[in-house]
Amino acid sequence: MSEMCQKIYIKNVLSFLLAGKMRIFPISDTHNCHRKLKRLPVADVIAHGGGLTVLLVLSLLMLGCESNKPDQKVAAEKPKKQEVAKPRPPVIYLKPYSDFSQQEAKELVPHLRRFLDGCGLSEMNVVVLPNIRLADSLMNDRRSRYRGDKMIRSIPEDGHNAIILLTHKDISVTYKGRPDWGVLGLSLMPKHVCVASDFRLKHKKRDLWKVACHELLHSFFNMQHCPKDDPLCIIKDAKGHADFSKKEHLCKTCMSKLKGGKWFSH
Image (tube, rainbow, N blue to C red; front, side, top):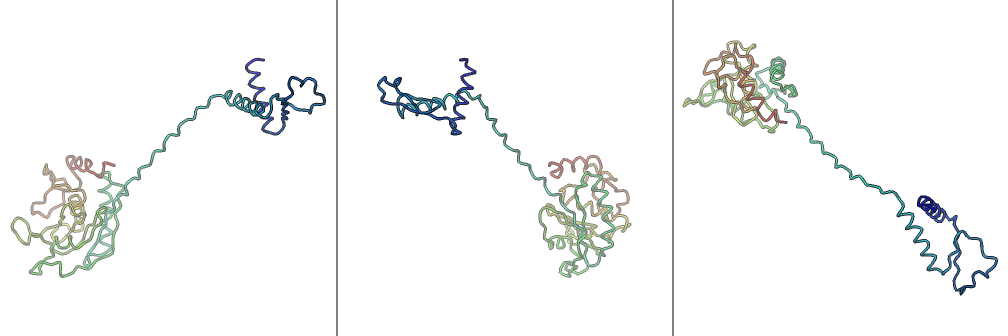
């Protein structure tokens, strides 16, 4: 019998045996007289040698079937790559004080939106929050101006989003030895809260969004004033001048610094 036929035979024998279709008849203690036996029961396999022989026959059949199975290589499951959740884009909240209307705040949104899109920050949303009270406790000692630093420190932050406070009032800060220096806006890095005022602007409605973006770049993106002192760069140091008429965008140098920051690293 060829090897292939042996394999088929053993496989068929085992399948019949396991299915209960094969009958095995053991003969023991015949002392070489088994040829004289008559009327033997009908069986598929006659095993001469008793119960131990039957077990041996079954073992050989099963071993032969297992040994003739084709080798199966179990492919190792590749571990699934865990998807890293993309950080939730920060939101820029415009928080107007009670002297600054909701409508005025909403008019700033498209200007900020256009500036952010131009900087490659289109995923950041701009949302106007309800007005908050402009408390007298935020004023200076002479009660003539509102202290920008007090305004910023009075607002809680979550460390992820940005907040721009909006007011028409005159704001001030201690600057270069002057205890009450009037400013257009203020940020206290690394806090994500800043304040913008149009009180000292020459063109209030036209240029307030530029002051807001200027302070946003300081507070949220941790950027310094333009190193090139480019008159067209929106983050150029005002140096006491309240004219933002020429400032529309970031210069190439400052744009490169912005895009080299952490917000473009993911």
